[in-house]
Length: 362
Image (cartoon, rainbow, N blue to C red; front, top):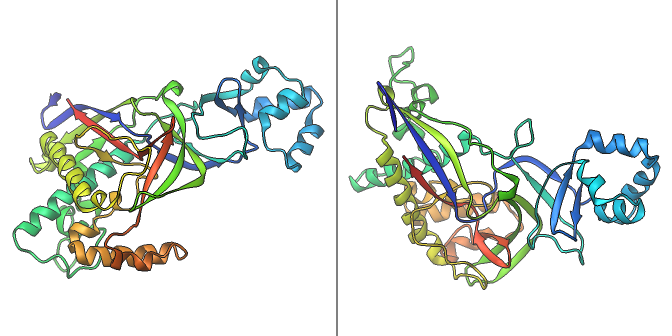
């Protein structure tokens, strides 16, 4: 830790135990990337170099025919039909990562959801993603502590966002009637800053398939895959706590305790309802920060602790039924848990719960 008057600056390390997906909102169709079955890697094109190459080698029309055809393997088309060597193709790509078992050359390729990358094409995680996960963990601790004093939390139905009561408490701005403005201006989280991560090496990136698991352990694979940070990756950030704002309400130790409490609540309230599917890994027992895409609604919502388990279940089931009308979430309340599927990433023949990461703050 570096101490600069009221500023406390820490090294925060995210230790990835299960595939971690932080998407940038874009995706690659199966004709927009190259799956090299010889080395088991997928490559993503530098579009400008690639199209210049097509023009120079009079391949534009042939490529156009490929795009309109039922053929979907771009690498096979370029190497076999166009006679382009792997060495030449490597000069036309931005980066390549391990496929694992997310793609199968014997079957149709899948859409790939892309990871967050900077202007130079380096994978990274925005600090806002970590701050959001820390915020959820800290809020859960605040909600549970409030419940222990006997306050009723079930009256306010804005279950997922108890911001006014716990976060927007700095009293930095008042309204014309003299009341305290309850908005982000008064948020205690103004005192927390998390930098964007250092770049993540492409050697630490991989593709992971998506599998839903029911409470009885039955699984259903989804026809898409995600570009993820692989298990075993360490991702580094700078965490700054401004104690002139926080006044000791949030410290390094309280953040770590919040992560531990959130993980325990997640296991006791949600995960216990699910039988481990066949092929699932048993992650080491430790507090996990659960974040990123695919980690599931429960990991991002405070409905259960805020409303209580019974009312939280009903509220969540209603939200799920409205968002996913064909998935029969209206039955969740009577079945005892909502959402009624656990999200897994398939990697090297094993199933991992998405986004489980250990955190160290030094």
